[in-house]
Length: 205
Image 1 (cartoon, one colour):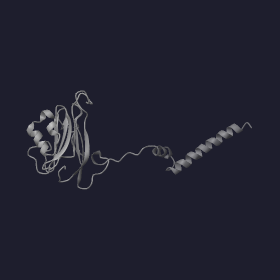
Image 2: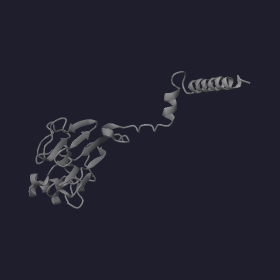
Image 3: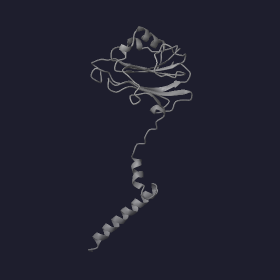
């Protein structure tokens, strides 16, 4: 009778040990049981494609992702086909308008007037885009497909993808007004993020 307690304890230890061995074997062999069990309750990571897009772009399309600057602290980012064209890390962004020209244009940092037909234009604001624009600049952006360039004001946030020769307004444009009632930062609206797929050798329409 005195051995009943110790026997039960030994039996329990043996049962737990056998259960652990069986589970380890079923889930991938000795030493891998616990990690495998953890994986069952861990949400799998979503696969990321070019520029961090959640889905791959169709053939003959370019993957892009843009983020405007946050206030006057964090610079904008422009990624195209998994290549970071502009960012604070690359030290090629500045306050105002950050413009990347793609499609047979070697120099990515140029003004928008002498563009080749079909050139894609990526624009991300930082701090204040309006002070860098005059009426001619706003008109040129309108010809590239922008519907918001004409109304950009002090410290607005703006991201835009257009093209030389576009016939319609670009679907790739976001704009947030600077307003003390809705600003995320003190004196600035929230940063804008835009991503998508653009047809190769085509306008942004």
